[in-house]
Length: 243
Image (tube, rainbow, N blue to C red; front, side, top):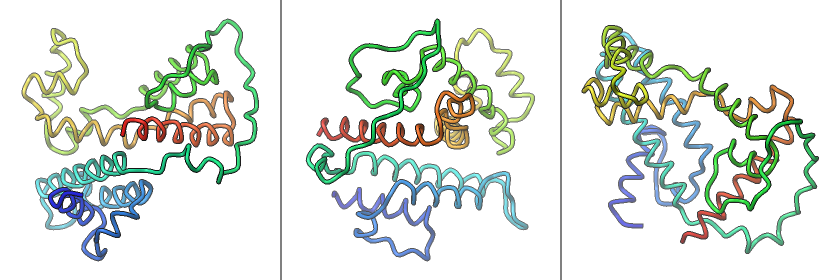
């Protein structure tokens, strides 16, 4: 690991985990995604712009929150790129998964029946390409997730980056055919850094798409967990094959 990269990772850990945690090279080696997510949640609650302690300024909270988001992105990128053991080499040390219960298919809906993609996938697409859910169910799940997603303008207003009048101005700019965030960026009301933070925070708090399939009885809890484990192994193999 290059010294400048190690320094950047250690700084990011200190931002998320705080000064009480001794961050060393060994700490980085044992760092896990769940630990990073938990540290980010805790830090975000402490320095979120909506939560101001007595004597604290909005600007200071916003800056601390921005640094926390950037640290989270740095550590996530490190964990994605970190060299992992090729699952194919250790397959014999793991018990094979029990056969998946066949999902009853809905009539008059289209299911995928082609070769499995050799690229990293998100949950919804993995379930579709594995033949578990139909194309129509995938679209419904995306619409469901989007309908429950908090608006970017709401975050930006609560953090003091724009006001309601600016939100109305952005919404009226219908000549710009693009999402709210990109429209605000093109109009100069948000910077690229602010937009990146808003999008990351929005993704972080949105409902996982897998919940749609459980709530609508398309999958059981255990089936969803099984698919998520298979998805993690699939994406790990794809990343390993690129090295």
